Length: 165
Image (cartoon, rainbow, N blue to C red; front, side):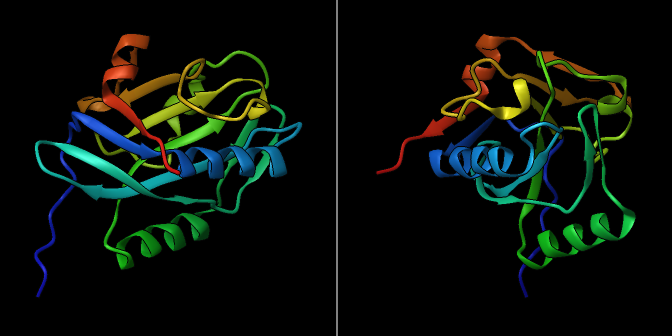
């Protein structure tokens, strides 16, 4: 029987294959041209508090130009899917209509409330293909429910894009 290990509250570095960025961008361009859109990044824990994103999950959601809502049944379905695949949920990546920022709704209603969860906000409905997280805003959920914004240097240190051929 495989031992279940919980995702730690702090992940030092996350490795993201460029294919995950392309898949996220493709989803935003297809489904979120004039409204907010989001995906979830799931993956595996590695050694030394590092992780690797292995999949991009596209939950069914209601959206408008200024918000996203996921029905409880879909939240449960996605959580079951992630558990069945024995993956961990590391973050949500979602678009905003203009500048990237963390709204009060983003802070109050993230997909996960587990410390260490990331919320990555992509500006301009994700119309520019993601090749990195440059231009995005990244927030990390801390113990007690507060969010901490990462500066650009921290984003570069903690999120490593793996270029694939």
